[in-house]
Amino acid sequence: MTGEDERVEREDESADGDEGSADPLAAAGVDPVVPDSATDAAAEEFPPDDEVREFLREVAEDVRGDSSESKQLSAVLYRVSDLYDSAESTSPEEIYLNVRHIMRIKEQGGIER
Image (cartoon, rainbow, N blue to C red; front, side, top):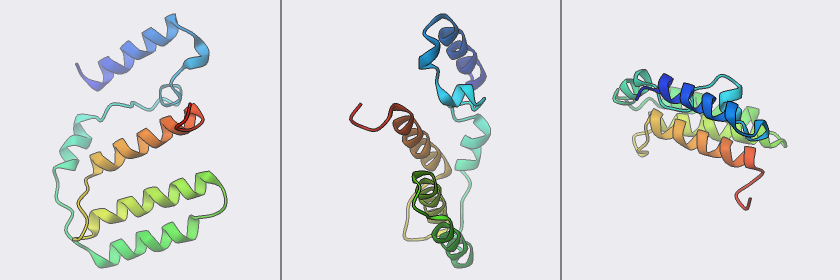
């Protein structure tokens, strides 16, 4: 089943169910399934690059503020910078899945719910 098929299936299910429980990613038109192109990109190597890593981390520090959204954006940028750090082991797919998980928890109102 492709990502598009799963998205359409989810839309059909949400159309039959309670509208209040719609997936915010689907409502925003974002396909929550990792597309094949992203999987291909995840296989690519990101050579260590101190300049790129430091730039991303500086931007992460600049955007970090008091709001939860700015803190989340800062965390995402910092995780992306890990792609260029030889001491870290991560992939674009892992970062995507982590961010998606965080967004779902936030939509639910927190982990406890």
